[in-house]
Image (cartoon, rainbow, N blue to C red; front, side):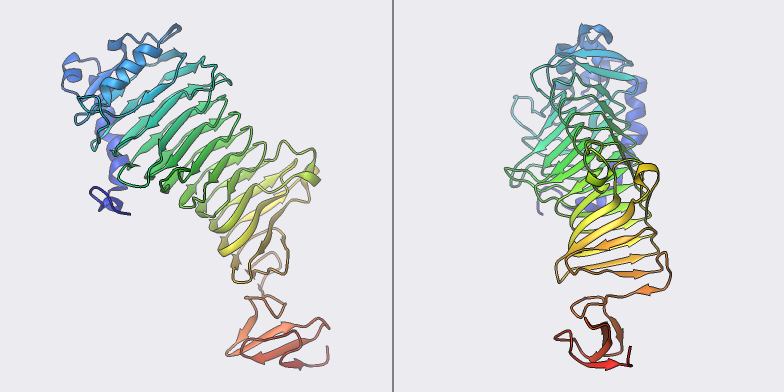
Length: 428
């Protein structure tokens, strides 16, 4: 991808560091100084009339503060004091220049709101907070915001940049966010959104997905999104849904539990999951026999030290149709109570796909002739493919070994062309 200042991958670590450090601290320390507001660097919501008593409608005041903060080129950090802020209409971040037209923002800007709760009384399906980019936005920070939905609103946080090119949201950071009870998704990101992080955030009891990530339906590629230490629980559909063929997302130390459907539904693959847990998803299923996996995957992925545990309707950690390469290392799948039959995985895939499972615990069921290579599983040793068509046949030098339909072990130099190809070994 080309675009402005695209040594951009080298900046991925820098933006969150700035967000967590001096800028956020400065916003909290100096937001009460009117001179800072005039300088275009720090803005305080209370200076625009935001009350935060849970009674006054703060929608107009908060929108005025947002508009003042997100003006190019001198975008600001907006500080919202601790309090309860009633909102009755969507708050929109839409960066503009001095003339009111869309303009780029390429310096750190955002909202610092630890202790502030937005209580939505939106009843027309409108989102609570929107970030809509008609330009390029870098180093956006949303820190410490708590959103309590009405159930009649839309998404809690919606970030959108659906363009073919030239307009982007990247190097952003969402941290210490809580979104609960919204009528749509807790958080939704679509389009040209990349090189961003979501940290230590909680998405619970939303009527849609806890989070939805995807390429834009009208254009734009979502990629290089990293999610750390977040919880996706009790949402009305999935914990997280990856849609519109996106795949370049990684989850680290996240927990997916008690969602109505999957904890994670990745329809085109998912780059990486490490140290993630999936517990008691598929709450909408009538019973264990009609439940499903904590994670549904089509395509490819790498899972490291992920766990699936169920006492109710989640049947296994992973159900996957593998079209590329699946690697699982140190993962477990188990259950108790009504879900004592819960296992590690159910796998199928294309004839060209490959699955390698190393040091994992829990049974694996294969379907449609697909087989994985299992190393150091519950029974120890190495489990190779047995069917002559398997990509995981045991190989000794140039020779392949397999078990024919008559139960005999066969061997051939090179790739077998049929079940009875090569030569039988022994008389068994």
